[in-house]
Image (tube, rainbow, N blue to C red; front, side, top):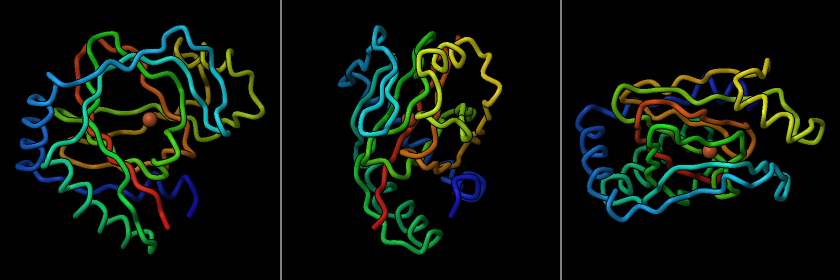
Length: 191
Ligand SMILES: [Fe+2]
């Protein structure tokens, strides 16, 4: 399955009650969250995966997220892709106003990453046509953060929906925004 078809196909409704429970769990776990910050890091490749500067907070999942991650979301993916699907890690990501994630690939445990933007939904920025081996990484990072990259594709994360992206293959990013938001991330590898 191509990256493009993965992007267009893999969305699953989460249900308002589950979204409310995720939201409550995210709020409850904020106290134990940790900062993920590497603002002075220069863009680099780590095993072929793009790493760039970022700033946000994250917490581990609780029971509500774990059950969705390991149960219905995993079953859906396995069926949709006709592959065995192994849940690896899941977390809440808290973006305060001004927080951001530079263009990156997810870590290797996130071959597929399920994203839920809690609240009114949102989007992630993606760069499906950028080859990290063929671009100047510093220049690409600067273009993305300045909003001037002409190969940018906005990928909607509709409310009450988990959107699955090929995390280790699709470069994605989030520029600083004035609004605070919480995103759920649920990772899988395919066997
Ligand atoms: Fe990511």
